[in-house]
Image 1 (cartoon, rainbow, N blue to C red):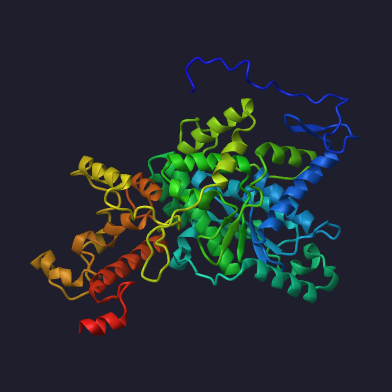
Image 2 (cartoon, rainbow, N blue to C red):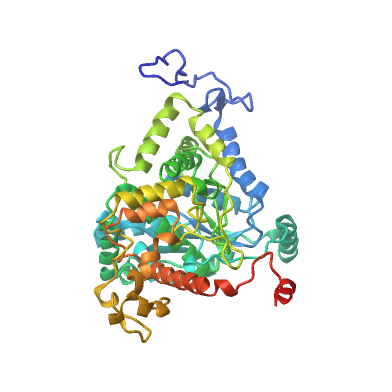
Amino acid sequence: MCQVDEDYNGLLESPVVVSETQKCNKCKETTAALILKPGEALCRGCFKEHFVHKFRAMLGKNRIIFPGEKVLLAVSGGSSSCAMLSQVQEGLGQNAHKKLRFKPGIVYIDEGCLLGQSMEERQKTMAQIHSLFKVTGFPYHIIPLEMVLNLPSSVLESVHLATDDPAGNYKVAVDHFMQSNPGHSVDPNTQVHQAELRVLTDATVPQLIDESQTQTLQELFSRVKTLTAKEDLLHTLRRHLLVSTARAEGYSKLMLGENCTRLAVKLLANIAMGRGAQLGVDTAFCDPRYGDIVAVKPMRDYTAKEISLYNYMWNVPSVFIPSLETKTADKSSIQRLTESFVVKLQVDFPSTVSTIYRTGEKLQTANFTEDIEGAPLKCLLCMCALDTTLGETSAFQATLISEQLSNVGTTHPMQGHLRPDTQTKCCSPCDQQDGEEQCEAHAVCCSHFKGGDSMNLESLLCYSCQQTVKDMTSVEFLPQYIMSEAKRRNRRSQIRREISEFLLNEDQDCTSIKAES
């Protein structure tokens, strides 16, 4: 048990310094240049071989990305995503061992509007990103975060794909690729992707950014009271924009640069934020929550230390871009506090990150309630399975009842925040003066009845997303595609309740119905 004032001085591992005569633990010949962890000293050559092999092995053993498939690389400009981009470049080179066979593209999302940056500052950052991407020869897309306000509601729909044998499909794809590309001598960096290159110059940046949309997005985040909720909402909107871009540009895989250290912090932070039921999806290598667009994390076996050493020793370029938590105190948000805790603990206990990470690998998502079509009910924002459809004796229901009793007489941010011009608008011919009983027949489309469609927004969210929305003073500035999808799901749920007595149960068939009649 941990106790106050406990003395760990005799147990902490002292810092290990590489001596000039120490040899590499792998080749036993060359002088060691670095120490990844106690007892693992490597020379430059062995370290690079170790780094490259780990990336190729992660993609090879999972067999998620098929040969010839289009993969969108989400690059933020940070060290981890830039290292991922460097590994893809090297893997597609002519002389690469175990050459990669997919077709990469790059996407960068500019979030300068939330940091209060001027247009000149945003243009300067985009110019750096532009020069970083241009030398790769890959098609790339630089998108301002304001574009999230123009997304269609279909981005929140999970496209169900056929679930055949993945190993068999992979072998078929490899055979087809080898037949179509004998010798595969074409250099993807110069010939395959150059025709698709999309360049975003400084002159086109102002045309993509609408000032009114910038103000709307800033107003949305100004309604969020805590930095924890802001970061969670930003992560959700960013993921929606990435998925929408991948679908629009014809990509079937989304490659993220989250490393082992980041995933360990994310795992603990998600538990603290009530996202424990989604840990298996959030931290796994493969994230299939959107169906047709599968997110993969090939950097998940790398620690932040490994990536920093590799980028420094091989001059991998990166761009420092501030975020919402830049220069904030450790206690400013749950995510920031968790990061500080894990990083400081890692200094004295080098196995901290790997222990948390390996524990997260063993977690699996529980099975939750399914809809009428047999698909699991998913959260409106994070698109994970709803963890709120539990029994009346669950801990969640007890927490919910306690919260309802303590909030009697207060206005919930997810209730009663319709715009003035829609609070009394009814699309059906009903007499609103006769009260709710008269309007109940048109409950599907009448926004006057029971406070409108936004009244049921809470039922469409998982527990963690509910806490995020509760930290908002109003939901009226949420993107229109989210509100439209909420209304669609509410109408669908209402219709299902109305026809529930005419639906057949799973154990009921036509024979039993004829017998009863």
